[in-house]
Image 1 (cartoon, rainbow, N blue to C red):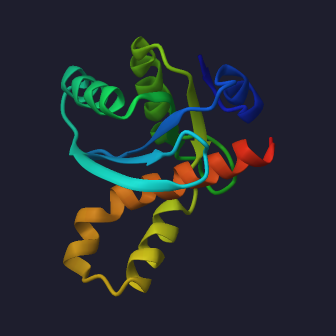
Image 2: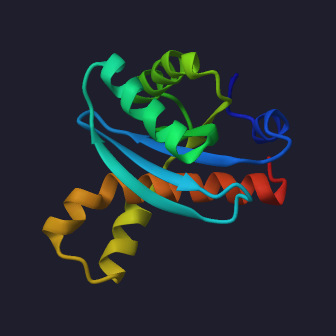
Length: 155
């Protein structure tokens, strides 16, 4: 099941469960993880993006290690809310990832990288270090927004 509708995703996970968040870039995939109670999201690894088969194997291993029950993928919408080529690419990636047989929530990721960058700057992180962590930090911002909506019953 792939959805953009929070209640649908929540209904697919009646017992909660750990979640993985993904920020899909052209070169990398930022990962983040949420606890089973959907209270907090933490940045994970940043994976080098390759062919889908290799990506799927890496993600499947992370999902198995963390007993993940659902996936949240950032959906890069235009500022006016419309979808462009990047959104279509994220939707295609989600369709391919559906072979893992986990519910997938596509979450509006507008401003996630900006929020992640601000957080890393507030931590007084160097520009070089920020560059290596921005994708996983953005995944955590995306995932935190989604779990806040899931836990609060927001549509």
